[in-house]
Image (cartoon, rainbow, N blue to C red; front, side, top):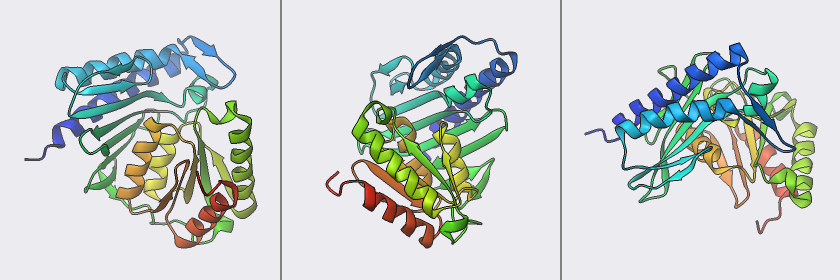
Length: 264
């Protein structure tokens, strides 16, 4: 029996339902936003999450859920990490890079086993499963397909967690990493919608990624996608690097080694 199949179907439905709602309110502009120095909250987050949780709870009422807006709902066996609007700043700024995302974690082994991302404006759907690879709109993908072997022509994503800009020391490290990427690579793309870019990286449309103190809900999905799409990866306590070719990976790893303390 394929134990993950019903979880996958539910995660796809939840992301699709949430994404359909986001697409509607993005086009109508009928949202209210709370703008903050380092973040933004939108009524679209709550509206999407309500719809996603309704789907998940109707299928798996006994599972644990950690949702971005409503917090932790206790349960067992599996944990559902629900990101109802990844890219809220983009959404409220009118930038079309945002998604709904779900990551399912096996609580016994603390291991992500499933990740789903829906990019509603493009009708893109990414599904990553433990031992089954990553699919983009139903087709298997590999992260090293079409990626550049030359860091000088690479497009690399940088991701930071929400706490980084609030701490001067962490902010300085992040800025040093960014400068290192910009010195060695063609383009650094700063990700305000990480799950969208994890999908593009898994497809081979982006060349590499550097994460510094990333947030758990996006990072577990990203590491699953990286592993299942065959990217080369390395990780420390505060950082994670992935790329599709050895030269780009080596360049990104060198940047992290230069700017992040080895003990961290």
